[in-house]
Image 1 (cartoon, rainbow, N blue to C red):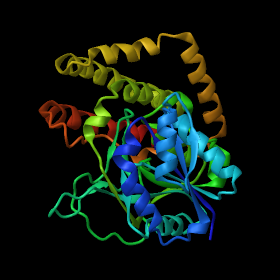
Image 2: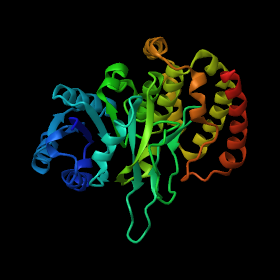
Image 3: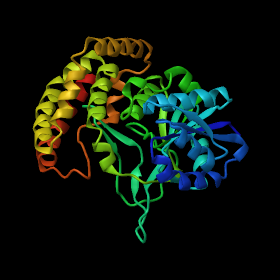
Image 4: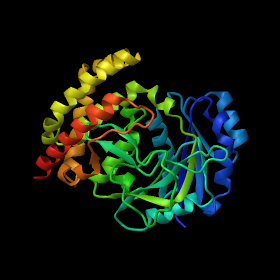
Amino acid sequence: MKKVGIILINYKDYAERFLQECRDSLRLQTYSAEDFKVYLVDNASSQESIEYLKNNYQEAIIIPRDDGNYCAGNNAGIKRALSDGAEIIVIANMDMAFDENWLKELIIGLESAKEVGIVQAKILLYPKSGEPAKINSLGNSLHFLGFGFCSSYQAFDSDIFGYPEIAGYASGSSLAIKKEVLNIIGGYNEEYFMYHDDLEVSWKTKLAGYKIILAPKARCFHKYEFSRSVKKIYDMERNRFRFILNFYEIKTILLILPALIIMEFGQILFAILNGWLAEKIKVYTYFLKIKNWQNILAERKIIQKNRIKKDSELVDGMVGEIFYQEINNPLLKYLANPFFNVYWRLVKRIIKS
């Protein structure tokens, strides 16, 4: 069996809230216990949190950090796991319960073909008593303006056969990635801090010529809370722009620019109405700093130089409509989505021509 390193991030009280069930489900894995190690990155570390982790997950390797940077935390775990001989890295959220065959099925999927670089588990919403299982993510969808959202969210679970390719990107809640891929893409971009980190890693993997697939028999159950995501508007919006500036070819950026400007006016209005205008202004302020542009352009130079696939080969994996099921906004549904969907169809034809 391949040696596997599983990376879990603790942040403040996460372990007290989520570790027990996560730990117990990992202890029940059918994958040989001798062939995987759990690396617990304590990402807002204190003496109390370290002691809690040591006392409650004795076999895990504890890695203390103090700045809360989720991407840097994953990199710290990856670095230690690779140095310990791991051939496959698994990134997983702590607010999960894993089916006993989860890890085994992830690894089988990852090794199903040479061109596979990342495999995502079938992520289900943590079940409520008496309710049938529902989907959290079967892979994430990427809107051409950089928005990401879960595909098939809240659909009822059903059998999926084979290993379908994920058109967008893998959810960072539960994915496995080959060592050879990490050696090429260099892990997580720590400037992202958190959010869109899984998109950034996935797109680097796609640009390197690898596929991302779903392992439908690798089931896990996510204690997902949408409200936890929307509280991080600044990180989400900043990283959305960073992604576009880092990864899209100049031609693509120019073609989507009119739609991007229209979306910004709409978002400013939405931000005013919903009380997060200050966060939006903070995003714009970030892009007024020269050092941030220097960093973005340096990253872009490396990405564009090393890419194997062009935008014309990847645009079919992007969508023109946004589906945030918790946000039932009629302007999005009846005005923005139809417009951007038609716009993207036209632009996509030009990119592919």
